[in-house]
Length: 106
Length: 119
Image 1 (cartoon, chains in turn brown, yellow):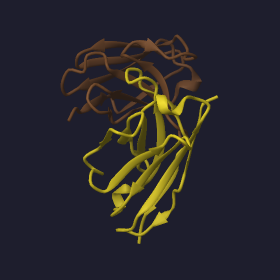
Image 2 (tube, chains in turn cyan, yellow):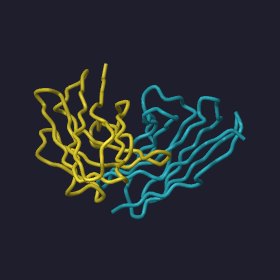
Image 3 (cartoon, chains in turn yellow, purple):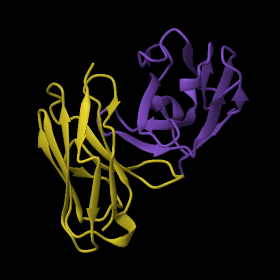
Image 4 (spheres, one colour):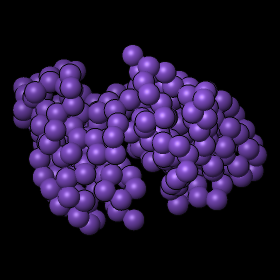
């Protein structure tokens, strides 16, 4: 089974900050990685797929990078609507989510 | 417009069974894998099961293998999750999600249905 590990678990930031979330796979997953945003009481929303492809309608301040086992999600300038929990997901072999990173107001 | 609507969530006793449904509309249902993903209260997302276009291939997380069965009825655009031998740790919101094309993640999700396993 492929394990996904995100860091940090919680991140405190201010509006306008550049934010980076890391995701590590226990084995190579090529670029078969997605990122999701989830707000309390809501379903997750797809942000990034194939590690770096921006989902339609998602603001360009979101970007993804990486391949193999190391991946990052970057928010270039944090906006009030971005305070949420973010999950990575591998789909190279079955499907596995990371444990999540909560982005909270500093 | 793509819609996924789950139903069937309830409070059930440990060891009992429950069937969830997910009604889909707004897209070519039989052209997509569909998955179940759950989220325990205050916890992260956990992939549960997936089913191929025609239902011939099914995949399960180890935590539910042998207890849960995923199925679909393409004539009704409906996905099912038959859950048996339920445990307290199965308590969660269960989401159905559409796999766009096998290489792009889950692009549409339902609103979720709550299953609570308690005596």
